[in-house]
Length: 120
Image (tube, rainbow, N blue to C red; front, side, top):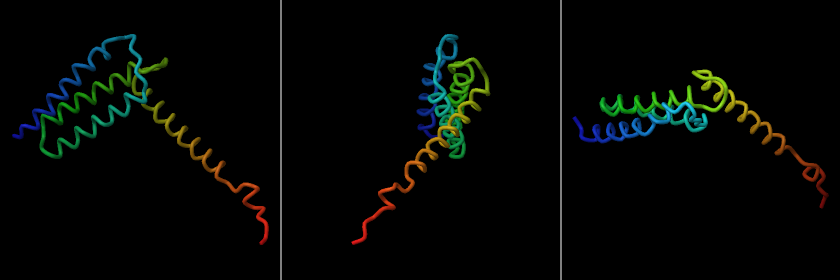
């Protein structure tokens, strides 16, 4: 057993401890732009630690991912709760990405000065 496994577990336990008041506070509102990426990172870390044989680190990171999931589900601003918040966030990202690409394409089209070059 590696000592690093326990160090990462300790960090995760601290994170869980610090996140618990947010989960318990019914008035807390955490933007999905913070909670969903944190939830995703915790999940990826958990999987990564598990593939490295760092069981305690994997469980700690899974706990952090669960805490961020609860925050995303129940402490996001807006009227809805639960997994619908994650779907709303993904749809919002897709819409923002589409708008960004559309704006970039529209603004990078040829201008009239590019088409009207003087012959030398």
